[in-house]
Length: 224
View (tube, rainbow, N blue to C red):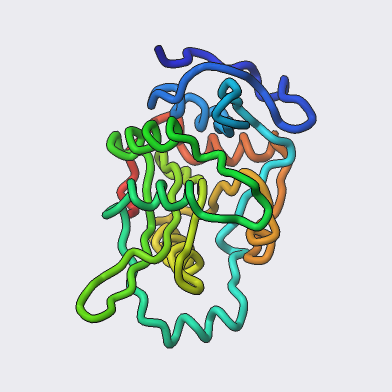
């Protein structure tokens, strides 16, 4: 049974932890995101955890920038971009990607299955980088996240070729900007997020920005 109500976000502790337990059904996830909350499993062996950190990480597209080296790469690379063609593979590859700052992954089997359901219901997305070689097109990187009305949240990304995840993120942001979207929820500000223009805002400010996206109308976006 889906969660019917979350505690007020101002009840979160200093680490942003708001609630323990519940489920990841589509209704629960929609309610969470429209309330400024997201799931972040601590481990497979512990109950599901829900977070609403203060401050919150965002990327305003007016501040978005890439390094000069990536811009040079962009001009000569042979990657191609597609959206929502291979969501399941993108999220599964994000789960197994090795990361220098993590021993394991928070993308559990339950996260994978329930976000695939969220995607099938029209509220999640993937941006995918492909490389063609010898007539064979390979998926070499991507980004996945949540989209509700004009709200977009980036959940995770991966690459198996140089700059493939950045290529997907770059084209995702260009696509969203063209659709009138002005910012992107990053949840936290990692060094990578900070390097492309991400910043922290007070949770109260974030909730105001969130509500301005018409997220409560639960419109299935058509930007991608």
